[in-house]
Length: 218
Length: 218
DNA sequence: TACCCTAGCAAACGTTTGTTTCACGTCAAG
DNA sequence: CTTGACGTGAAACAAACGTTTGCTAGGGTA
Image (tube, rainbow over all chains, first blue to last red; front, side, top):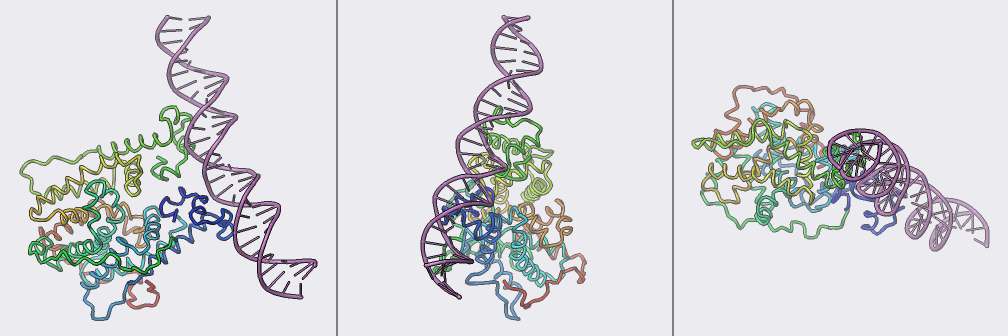
């Protein structure tokens, strides 16, 4: 998708049509104009990013809050770090950074439930925390997760590209989970737990988490 | 600056010149073309963002690593959260998210020293940690800090705008510092240290408390 | 056959883009 | 006073933009 790579303004209808092998007039015919095509792309991207092998599960009643947080982080890292549809996620993230009036609603619909889900988990985890701290704690979790998507190009420039690329979804999810749980006092401090050497390097998940997923362009 | 608000492609030379009260031909006369003007803007933004009342200090020899981290976080939060030159920081962050070939060098020059500084501090703080974990820990710190700049629009959409705006630089810096130090086991766990007594259960959770409601279509 | 409607295409539309041109004003040096 | 370099503003430029137009098939209906 050209919109995902270049953004709304930089993407031209001619390039989009050349890429999709359709005639220029088709955009006007089917969508009306460029902006309405963009909105439809956003909706499609939202549907793509939201669907997947694992949606946000509704846990069994007895699930411990810590496990919920663990699962939440794992899913969110998987979604953003190695999404089934990279271009769809890229398009959403672009709107994320610079929301346009067109995509505001779509973004809200996509993000809001997850934000509330995280806050509910944290609230269950820290019953006594005031809302302000709850909010910032959620931001700390999401900030860690989103960093790898939003700042990866810069990180690869500054450090070794290979070292950054070696951080796969499983490693990142594990790190963020431990870091967060340790910060909340729900697990031993991070470096001490790691110094024991119990951490196995072999448990990385195979990167093809959905080998049969249709990978067509939006 | 029009570039900061709209990005390179969306900003037109006519709007830039109208905004700056100069003639269109002046751009060609002084800079050559639009792109070289953009590079000069980036350099100027870098100079603006780097200068300030407190540059990155060189601490006295005896400074404890914890205090260095505290100061680092405080400075970075202050720079990104309430920068002296908002538009300059906005322009840098735009390049940050979508680096162009033009601005790559400028960005590297601006960010790289700070990244290494943070890693040195963390290395001093955690002598035994392997590089991989050191890297991710630095990302966790920077992710928390950058979240408030890169995702503020979305956060304001999802939660109360006032609640998000109430998180000033000092509060964010304090939170990130405590969260990080607790995660590293260098301070007591965060919620315990903070649980002074604000035990208010009647916080405003806007109707998000429907655990298995069908509206949750994630 | 005659008619209508939809889908799709090439070409052209008017506008806006970044850039260039050129005449004019300024001012210090010769 | 003349000269020439410098800076500036209005206009013009080709190219590219999003959008519209007019036309051609093709299939269903009466």
